[in-house]
Each structure stands twice: as structure tokens, then as C-alpha cells.
Figure (tube, rainbow, N blue to C red):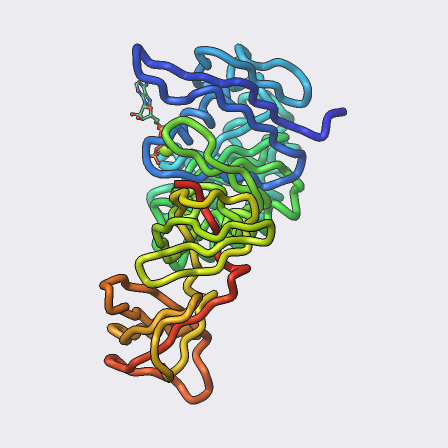
Length: 359
Ligand SMILES: Nc1ncnc2c1ncn2[C@@H]1O[C@H](COP(=O)(O)OP(=O)(O)OP(=O)(O)O)[C@@H](O)[C@H]1O
Ligand SMILES: [Mg+2]
């Protein structure tokens, strides 16, 4: 059997002259958590609805477990979807919400009881089975929605921004829960979010979407450390972006003139005179007291303009005399914050940590 549990090939979706998805091809591996990430309106929900069978693609095919299911209705697919608004039945209690699908299938009462109780245990709601939906919290409603989808033992669980309605703290708790449930059930998850932190915490692989196309696919580490486009570098984590022009290109790298001086980069194959963007992550920049005159390559002198203390990290915003603002970050040292506002500092970085992006 194929290792890919879902195969989307050349999916295009148009409404009139508007193209919501443009020739998307994507394989989902059995057992992974794959996240669709991207800004509002980029087509994440549309792609999920096509995978689930709530929407037909204008072109392309959906295969699940090796079978073409492009035109198969949702209830005949081995997938279940958890919607952002949960869509629970308010006139039923927690138990009956979870049992609903099993009763439709006409399963014997004893088996329904066993399956529902096992699911309520899995989502840690075994003491809430007779509560009405109006009597539970948002986080608990989310768990009921999960239990209701998982009780059908789908091969694939589709989760469309399932935590969007929850506050940050509960969201992080639920992410841990989702990971545990994923491990315990072995179900393949396709997860939609527009929150890059959520995507990083949860995913085996991330699909970054932009305007109906796939921008980049990779592990969270690859997306963060090796973005291939400006869009990906900006969307995934914080970074310093510098516009530059290449000079002295060689087989081992190049020098790039940027507004704050010049920067050595390790990337080969660049063309002299070409325009590029450099992305340097705040944690790749070292900060030290300024000493000595003049700017050297890979060094920026400036003045600390702002210091933010975020738990275990300290973030400095440093203004170069030409106006550019650079952000650098270091772990909070035992002696606390090392540089105050107004300090003259020198910023340096390892050329290998600079990502060169086409302009
Ligand atoms: N039934 C429809 N008819 C016409 N256009 C639609 C329809 N459904 C969605 N769209 C459009 O398709 C685009 C993609 O919508 P989609 O809901 O997939 O975005 P999304 O990435 O899920 O966004 P969000 O993060 O806001 O949920 C949007 O521009 C949306 O307005
Ligand atoms: Mg959506």
C-alpha cells in the first residue's frame, strides 16, 4: 500500500473568474501531522473542504488510501473534519454528541457505550458526559468536537483552525493534548492554522500557502532555518531583512552591500551586481560593547533604542546611523540585561547564518 494516505494532485478551484487554488499537488504521509499555514484567504479551508468532500475541485484529483475519491461524498470517505465553530448539537448532552455518528451507523448500544466512553476518557471528559453543551467551556467543547470526530476512527482527521476561539493559554494546553491524542490514536492529522507558532509546535511538516499556491513545504526547522522565499522568511518567525547588491561573488560565497555596510554570505552561485535580500534571525546576531573605529564587514555599529525582556530572552533593537533598525536576541544572562537604552554596541554574526533570498 502507498505510504501516502492522501494525495492531492493538480487541484485547481475557481469560482467564476476567481481562482482560489491554482494547481496544488500535495502528498500526506500516513501518521503525520501536516499543517496548512498561510494568511487569511490563501485557500486553506477550501483545500480542506476539497479533501473532505464538501467541495468539488474545478480540476485535479483527490486520492485517499490509493483510491480516487474526487467525487465521493464526505460521509463515504474515511476522513472526519473538526470545524472552527465545532458545530456541536446544543440540544444534546456531551455523551449524545459523541454518540451521534455511531447511532446513525446503527451500531449496537453496548458498543456505542464502550466507544463513546473510551473517547471521552481520551479527551479527559469522562466526568462530563451528561452535561449539556451550553454548560461546558470553550476548551471542553473543543474536546467534545474532537471526540465526536475520532469516535468514527477516521484514517485522516481534518482540523480547520480548531483552536481559534480559545485564549492563548488554553490553546497551548490543547496543542499538547492534540499531540498526545495523535500519538495514542496514530491517526493522520491535517491541521489548518494561520498561526506560525501553532504550526511549529505541532507539525511534522508545514505547507506554507500564499494566494492559492504552495510557497514552500518542509519541517518546521527547514521552514525557519532555510526559507526559500522572502514570503516564507517573513511569515515564519521574526527576522531582519536587508536589501543588498552582490559583489565579489566566488565559488565560496560573496560580499553583499547592504544599507548597514557589507555582509559576507556563504552562498555560492550568486551573480555580481544582482539584487538580493538577506535574512538574519535575531538570535543569530551577537551584541557586544562597541570598540574601535569604522565599520567592518559583518559588523554593524549602532545604538540600543529599545530593550524588551521576554521571560528567558532579552531582545534589543539597535539603530544604525544610516537609519536601519536591527533586532537581536540573546538568552537572559545571570547578570540580567547587559545593555541599556542609549548604549553604543557592535553587532556581529556568522556568515553561515545569513540566508540569501532572490529579489
Ligand atoms: N463559496 C465561495 N464562493 C466564492 N469565493 C469563495 C467561496 N469560498 C471561499 N471563497 C474565496 O476563496 C478564497 C480562499 O478562501 P478560504 O476560506 O479557503 O481561505 P482561508 O485560507 O481558509 O482563510 P482564513 O484563514 O480566513 O480562514 C477567499 O478569497 C474566499 O473569499
Ligand atoms: Mg479558513
